[in-house]
Length: 311
Image (cartoon, rainbow, N blue to C red):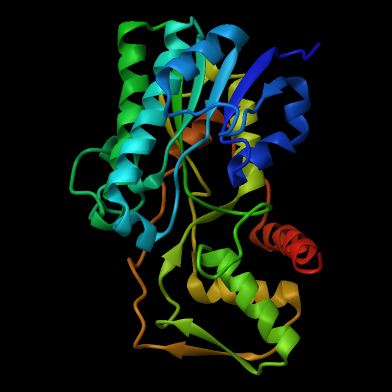
């Protein structure tokens, strides 16, 4: 029998969920990770029935409809309505079934677009959201506030929220149509090496800064928080607390892959915001920091990428 009891994980087929499932600490739990076909999180009756039938000791909510800027802008109804429904149904379904421990995974998109860096937890709901993903952000804010309101009414209910920074890692999406920055760089530089290209283009001057944490490290934080839930804050950023320039990400990927060409900056292309960095004082007080270096994380991600490319 698993020493820590039963953990219900939503979003088990996504990047975060898969990294949680393959983490060594996962073996201490009996983990239920139903697929969307097995459990439709937008169906409140189905969710309530599932939770009542399995009575988990802890729920980790990592599910959500996700996508890039284009998808968020094209389908704002779905990103708001579906994510709101999923968050509401699993949180209230768990609480009404008597589940006392709940870890909600949110997003740094909840922060105001003009908030100063680093982004600290008390800044949420102090300003206008980024319009391109406002629907998704509002849904995440709703779930976060719902957990906080449950805590306000029932202090014994350990309903806590972790706010991850940008992530990359194993089980990431590398298709240029759907990938985020780091997997896109890995794909681009790998193709340059295979095709013998002498140059790789970087949009902008490459000085914009981004915070990307290895997804396996988030899994580590989640599973450690799962066994220490009473001692973590109600709301806590989960990131590096430092960032890198776009140029540094490209160079580190090139070093890992072994491509020795030159980078060319296209100054006519958009670069987005100059910085988005999460504050980590609460995380440091709890006593956790990400164990994987950028180079090691990229190396492990590239190894996973090669497994997919060569199949």
